[in-house]
Length: 348
Picture 1 (cartoon, helix red, strand yellow):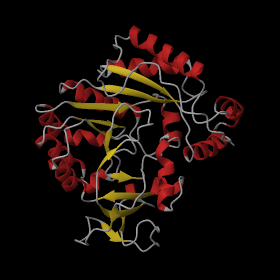
Picture 2 (cartoon, one colour):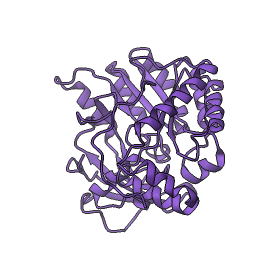
Picture 3 (cartoon, one colour):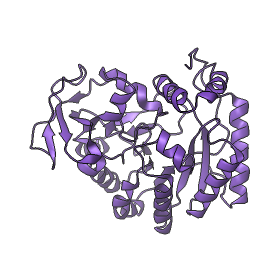
């Protein structure tokens, strides 16, 4: 997706604790309002406030994902996951897929009003909408900008089905609102927890809530009556794909009250591939040869590896009483479809 549909918002004052920033604007965001915040949680971060011209996006037909429509109120993500597949989208903005993706976040400040307007359009037929599928809509910036409540309210008012996938525990703020939405429409809530090793979490997902805190949020939603799925992703070759890690992670997911678990092996698209390779060479250089072998043909690990990994997670899930994801769930535990034609890329 390109960015011709964005424009600068009118300057209506500063969010609490913010100050206008003065770095040069990316060429793709002429006239955006640029802000920084003086709180420690936003140190080194820059926010580009824009008014989007559209917000409900159709997923390209060749995509592997099981939904057709998405809402993405943010671009860029303070979670700083080194493997994030969305990193390359920042290059469309004349920003880089590395530190800029982690520290320069685009905020669609009119997201809520746009959702309401587009749901009311005669051509809209009430299709399911997925959120959190590109970058996390409950990343740290959401605590400041509060874009999600008006989005959820609009979806509720139009009884439009939707789902949210997140690593962010800030979604707990909106639990009462999500319960009300679930009274009139199908609402899916899923969390991403790829592993429970805290040392690995601090290294590879440094801006996210800990796996333990995410699982506490799973419990809160399960106790509130939601069937909460957990996307066990990504599973990292050589780091979280051993039997001990799989057993510990599935056990913790089951204990938290999740209704299903869906494993996905790490995939490395351009942008994410280079950033992850840099991290791997620095933190786990002995694994570089294995990754070169696994990802020599493109973004996806070999099908044999994916099938074997899925089978081991499935067996652990059965031991812990987690049922297989059924058709209609946010994600499916079925074997992944064949990847697209191999991309000839180099890892390191």
